[in-house]
Image (cartoon, rainbow over all chains, first blue to last red; front, side):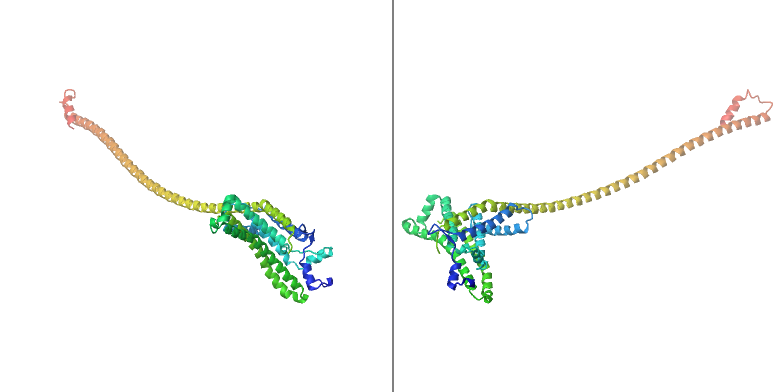
Length: 257
Length: 156
């Protein structure tokens, strides 16, 4: 906690959980989320593209082997769950896992580090974990949602999709109820995807901030275990987002009955 | 929790990252992995084939060895037989030669004997004629008794 700022605890928490917003009303942007996620994206995906460009089918180096392990993990999950033919599911799953993991990892930076640096540069707020911004998580989950709709229509054609929406599970006579059920079911997917990730990361970050309010000589007692535990959380949340996306797209490719 | 246009911005960033991964990250790595899997499969197959070839070559060399041994034994047997044949032929020839020499020697001997006998006969006839001449100097005329003397000579 930056004592010199002279903030109360609630002001401190509020400060750390406020985005740097540019603009007014709906047409505004969370500049910190946009820039942090873009920089991490360029860094991580640029790195992977560099490794991929130099990839050899012979004996791989350590770096290539590490990226290959990651890719094979994703590929295995896709193969186990997704039985359709699609060139996008694998890359999509890899993108989600790697990006979410990278964004979540910002959670492990000391909570005061980035605000301090940005503050000394005259920037008032800088929420460094993009996945604690619901805009970030909903942006991803809604993209996945539109892919679900797209593949439903692509695989089953518009008529088949409509037929499924109105007749499953109760039959044609109960069409309105079927539609309502389907609407809830499909809308629940992006909402749960986004809120799960957002909730976990927001709560995690909140705990880190609360720990930062402790006296400095006591912070490690809670901070170290929570940080170590959080290594698991950030990986797990990235993995859950990825695996659920694969499952949802797999469901979109399969007929419900 | 305030939703704003960041939603669209991040969705676009997300879409770009998905496109980027689809184009520059996923395909080269998957291609490398598939290629390596293929190489490994080929390597294993080649090893298996090598093992089979080795086994086949061993069988072949064993067969060749057995055949060579059999042939060598045959040759030895043949040469032994031939050797015995040569020895027998040589002996037969020697026996025949000896026989021939013996026959010739006997013929020569007989000829000699005949010649000696002839000579002796002539000599005896002469002696007999000389003796008879001495005994019968007066009464016997060699010309008139030539028939008698020749008959006598034939009897000797």
